[in-house]
Length: 125
Image (cartoon, rainbow, N blue to C red; front, side, top):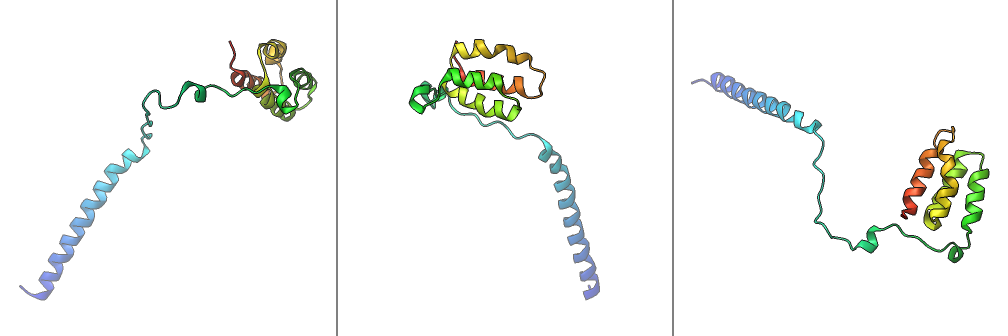
């Protein structure tokens, strides 16, 4: 067997290996588009007090719930409502939800979503 024949055989072998590796990589790339599996954690990893929303007294941080509700009702921009509703989510209660419920029909884009998020943060019965 000559050197040229050995060279041709080794090139053919390397080309075959590269071809098989390319085909295998292409077949497994279809799996890359699949969504990742959701991570699961055992139930009860956190105590219930850490899973509940945190509420503080408005007086403790110097904010009045009534003042926040009045400012939300008088706000002109969605950005102002968003900032105020975020604060209301921490100190609000059922009275604030009842007062602001008519704003869920507000025609401005984003206002109902912001208020629903605040109601979710309040998280009372």
